[in-house]
Image (cartoon, rainbow, N blue to C red):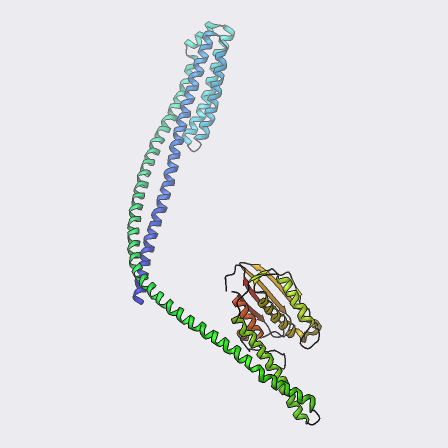
Length: 468
């Protein structure tokens, strides 16, 4: 077994190491891919800056051409077209300032361009005024001297410098993009190879473990068959025990009736002929016979639980509990109405056998009233319920004598009692019936208490129930 565990741990270590390496490679590939995407974005950005530079050159050339055309023809339509190009030029300068905000050299170029364009626009205005006020000859003279074109040459020079800077950046960024593309391609090839190797290793380990698992599965099937056989034998034994318990309990009732009957007859017919000690003995016999009768009745009820099939149906728990409380409080065994009436909160419905669930409430509420009776008028019993997380939970809380939690595991056993018969009447079967009914419904029972500080008994029933 230790050798198998050692091999298993080694295999796990190898696989974990390979998965870790694969994870690292994937993370690296992802990082390089993101970096490559960012670099590609900068390449696109550089192309956009270069396109804006070219558009600015075009605006300048067009504005010069329209100014010359106006100087020659005097047609004011050329001035409108020229003014539109100037507007486009100014917008392109704003775009260049924004697009090159991360580049100090280009920002200096944009500032120079702004100054030069301002001076150049004044010269265009001079040509326009000469044509408007002095006529064709004056405007032609300025055009012939290249009055405005000369002022445009420094602008074009700065634009050329900007283009050269962007061209250099483009070369660098494209080179970086290409380098990253090669790295990412190599990483993905490595990932593919690594994944193939990992797949082969995992496949080999799976084949090796499958042979072991097949053997274990065969052994498990053998054990399951053996368990089924023993379970069937155990179920037959339990049924025999229940039948035996039922038969014994039933057969004990006849002689017990004789004992009870003759004891009663002696107490009624011959009390004068008996001394006080003999009368006391007869009372003890009668009380013990009644107690034994209660034990037999409870034992019969307990044995019937294993023989009776569940009749599951929806239960209005609010109505059922109120009915049980009314029955218990109005007719106790001593003929005296109970001074304590449990307070019942809103109870959610459930699904189960109404007769058996009713027996659960009868036992829990009867116990709560019985063990709270020493409190007198200060006794308080509270019934609550809630539905959550697939379970419907019900609780009965009292402020009675309580119990020591060290002995809580004995509460739900047959004939197990934490208080003497002299203190509180009972047979010790009620909570065993509660436990068996709830567990047959697929539920759970719990008890919490503290001596002289009351107790809380709760049970849970699954909301989505399966067949019994």
